[in-house]
Image 1 (cartoon, rainbow, N blue to C red):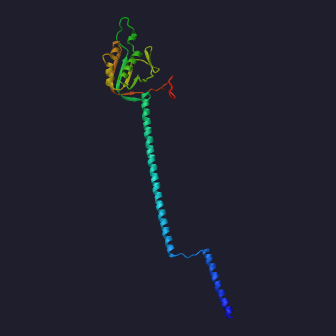
Image 2: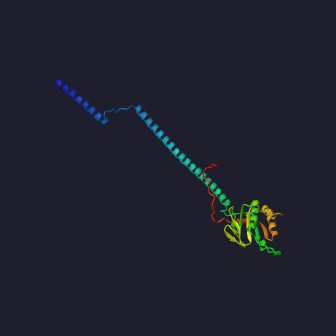
Image 3: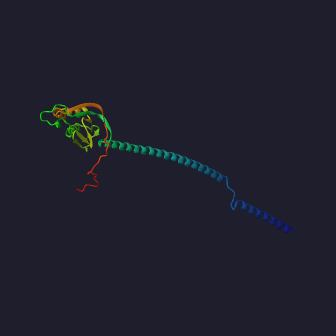
Length: 247
């Protein structure tokens, strides 16, 4: 009997041990649950370190984004300034070209010259043409003004360009295809004193025309407005040269 009791006790102990192993295996999925305090402390330190690193990286990211926004802003402002400077430069060059080709209204100091038909009595056998203002008379005045440094010219409001045509048409004069009658008012922007001195010099245009009986008057002024040439300049023969010159 004692022999069987001993066997039963051993069986029960083994059964309890086996049951405990099974329960622990199911709970731990076959792995040990025991972790030493040192490992737990290390894990905690690592977690805190990772948190600090993550925070540092997050701050670096924020700082980098701020710098990127600042660089973009500086680039935009610089690029905008460069574009504005280029635009202003191009507009300035365009204004100069418009002034040079007469398509811009201009103002400045200068002289106003009035040329009119003569009123003196005709000499015996003299032609009335001697007392009339001709295209050649106007051209003489314009050329003298250019020689004296005139920067802009007009006759009876018609802007004078390098391509302007001036020719007689009976008792009138055609300028740029438009007919004008006497008197002829010539405006010139430039050094007024110099232009007046050239016109009124002893051998100047004024005395030459007066000798023929033409009325001639020069007036200095601090402010003259000369209108732009209204029509579009036309070039019948001249075109832009393309490519290199092979000659």
